[in-house]
Length: 388
Image (cartoon, rainbow, N blue to C red; front, side):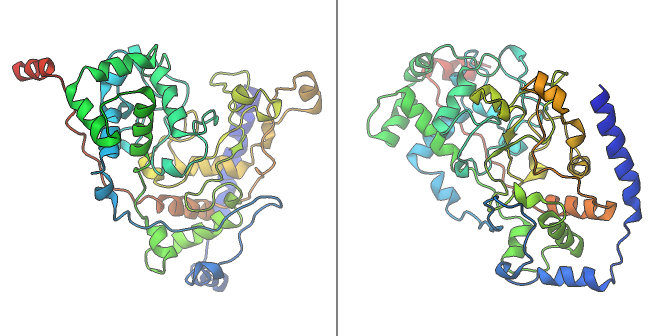
């Protein structure tokens, strides 16, 4: 409780003091910063990155012109049907799309997931945008492939709650139309767990972000961003130190960090990657999320407790080291989490924070909403449906 009050006081004081930083839009230095980005990305100012961080420069994404062709591939059609089909769950009422809804940025807009028997999970549902680019899955990185990842929600008691994946195979096998889909995708009508997982993975790999205004700017359309957004990108890359973890095409290092939100021995406690590795150094570490399409994927963080970008920037601005254990506390309790050394007090003024938020908002470009498919049904189900 004392640590929580201290964080709140520190953030509040920082917010009040930040009002002093009023920007002069005619200032020569400000104008020079804006102009320094209106050129090829190789000539941009060098970002502020700590020694040892293997960062990569921003990279624009292009519109996926093959998207609709990809969606017509037999294996993608099969994976899409399975993804939206509640028959993959024990109750036959919950599908993968129940938590990863295309209308909601491939997430569910909930603080934490809601699954079988109305049970709540403990973590926020990650978006599936650009999931094919990831190298680890789940907030704690316990899966290394999309196929391995799919087993988690299918069998988790508070998600789809299947006791045995063979039950799913038996259920799908009862529907002739699915056998045809498996024939089209794999060359025969054999339905197996591996093929179901593979098809789900192939479909999910087709879910990609569309270009944002930031991408247009990177590619040379320099009026795509406002001066404030450009300045925010500069602060993001330099003073705010964000490039230590958020870089490259999807603005993530696909690694794990403790940013001070473990809630150790308090409500909302989550030990993060430690649960997977049992390494005390991993307590409180979570996978760095992509920053693409932020406005489509709120709320944020592993616990879904944050729905305000300005508030999140304030958290980073504080540095979060005021909650680190003393040497005596760490000696008595080796699991006591320590905030990542990459986190440092930033000293951002209010305009700088507003500019960073403006830049982050400009990273959202996806608007296409995928239609839900007409699912394969057996003849009995079709007749029952007609009578409703």
